[in-house]
Image 1: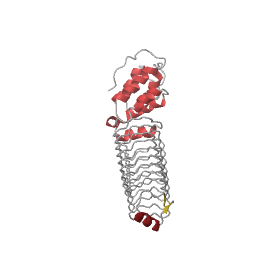
Image 2: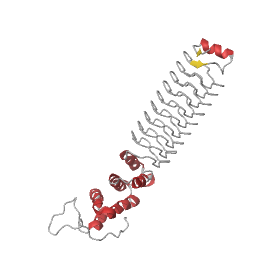
Image 3: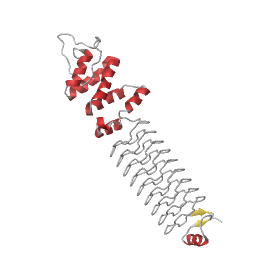
Image 4: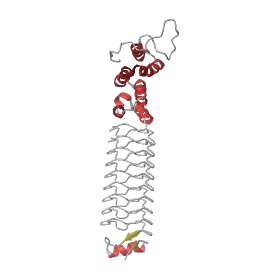
Length: 325
């Protein structure tokens, strides 16, 4: 039920003259009060028309739309949100409207996804613990969004702007993040199993302890990223940019790092057993305690040998590794 407003003063749009036909889309006798009654009691089509008519009543009409937003559910609430979103250029009002997006308890998961799909620019939106499984967020601007522990399993985020977003503990398994911008994002303890991060920007991102098993990061840019203790088993890092990235104590067993740029990367105590390092560049990398058992090191450039015993050095050279004198 909508709250009563003191908006009963006549308006030039209020009445239809006697004897004239009243079109379905037109205003009815009673002005805004009549519009409110049709929103409360009308069928779906009547409600949709009445919601649009509120715009004829200036600020009083907008108050009605906000009442619908606060006190209704589902399609009616979604329609009110869309009308308000389409008819404001005020940044503060847009920020207030964004706050309604995470209210899945009111909107329901399906309506929440619809609103996110409808709105293109959503910087700093608060979606902590939101259920966005399978949502289509392709190309959306989610700059600095709060997505802590959000469920984004199978979501389409291709080309999305997620720089400096907070995705700690989020579940992005099987998500499509191809060519998305996650530079500066916090993905600590996030799950990205089998996700597609091809050509994604992850510059200076935080991926400490995250699970990327089987993910595709071909051609991705992780310069200065922090992957300390991350589970990177079978990850495809081929042709990726990993210079100065922190892989300390990371699990990279069977990972594909062929043709990757790992110059000055931190790989101390990393597990690279059976990894593919063919044609990779590790000049200046910290390899203290790294495990390269069974790894492919054909044409792998290690620079100067500061980390390996003579026996290990000779073994790596025999397997095709390249060291500088």
